[in-house]
Image 1 (tube, helix red, strand yellow):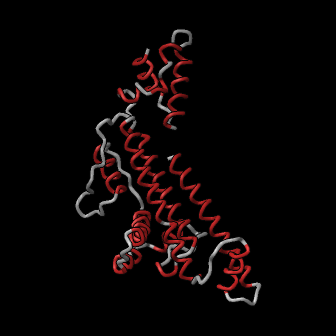
Image 2 (cartoon, rainbow, N blue to C red):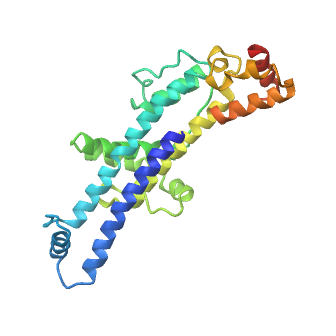
Image 3 (cartoon, helix red, strand yellow):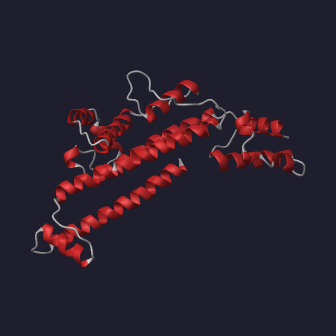
Length: 266
């Protein structure tokens, strides 16, 4: 989760930089009597760049569409990493496979959630608008990445959205928008939704960690428990175990679980 937030944060900064540059150009153009193309060409020439004859409205849409490609890649990386994390909390055979259940789009997110629900006996219950919003921006991303825009699929994905629920959850954003009217808010909404989905998935795993499993007990964070137990009281060692677990998984085991870990390692 930390890795995903760092990646998306860096992507946010990058896209914000581009947005600032674009808005700066538009403000500069509005303060002149030149056409937009003339202003862009003059500014680019001043900076040693060969840029002219650009349809700004069309170009802005292409920018936003391209921004939507990378967050999906980060989510794929998150799913791959999370599979390894789940193996490390006591489920060594965990694997999301290659196909989603029948009736679901075959996405890594659907496969992950399905296997968490089935294999870990946890219910990851995303709100309807979160899932539909992810599918909408995924559809836009696929249209660009595969250079084959299917207007019917895009329209259907947009019509499936609960716009009121989205605006209630993200009241400061004027999004989602249709493909022909995308704005920077669409990118912001796309990344924010991915972060929230990932956060809900990770939080759901807290109750699933098997503290007495070989995978947990062999984690490097507990490597010094046996040695330290020779010179520290049991009470201090239980506190040390809680600290190690919290630093590693951001989860504090119960007193009973700490007792199990202590007995297994000492």
